[in-house]
Image (cartoon, rainbow, N blue to C red; front, side, top):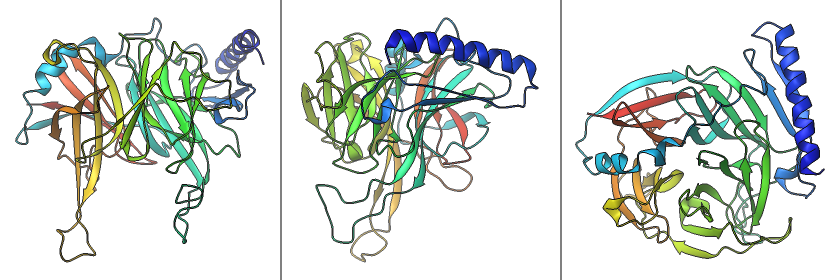
Length: 376
């Protein structure tokens, strides 16, 4: 289907959804389905199914006009305040916002102004199973079965919309960490296993339509778009052990063929595995280098080996050089939820509100609450 046809179809989808929402009470759910813009056999080429909630329709998914990204709008303030953090920092919980409905396994979050949060999530119908014989064809588990989602919530945690980006049977259903650049949301739809495949997609926040950009011959997540060097984009592989740098000005190979990255960089840090990253900018403190902020966890030690300390889960946030993957500053995140879940386990975002840096964490699967913290 041509993109012009998709635009026309999207208009009618939104028109019909708006009419239906005016005819029904706010609690009624409206679901619409439209064809994707791609005809390639990738996850992003499947039908886009959007369900609206609480009286919302296609014209209220995102704010208009779209606000700038919080992470890169105040880069020097964020970098300055981050540099004051230590192991002994006291963290104050500013807000705890329950998110309505199932979040499945949240992987990334993008704060689009104070009243919209977009969550990337994987719904796992059948989780991958590790091979008993080790590796087969370069990977250690089955592909599993599931769906990739983008879920939109308002500032009070009420569900606005849920877009299913993949169709039944797609193997690239793992929707990883995301980055909002003020115009688009950048995401990857991957097989949920190492050494596999992925598709980089660019999503319009106002429609949740995902446009496939290129295919990647590896599991990929943690998409980060440099909004200053607009042709530069980064993705992270399984465990964030390696970053791939992409030149968006170069013509990718036609889908579904794979495109090679412009460069790769090994992650020299084994402190945490980065889950969700946000582009910060080219701050003065780091001599104009492109930097991102990443959050994640790692398990250290073992409960099965007496020679090692008992297993401990650590969480943290780091400012990382995008070109080299060298961490420039990092701080532990010791907070846990009421049931002991590490706060940095899943998605993360950062913004400056009333002059103070805030971290946004969404650690729980399925029934999730957003935890908002400021440093004292």
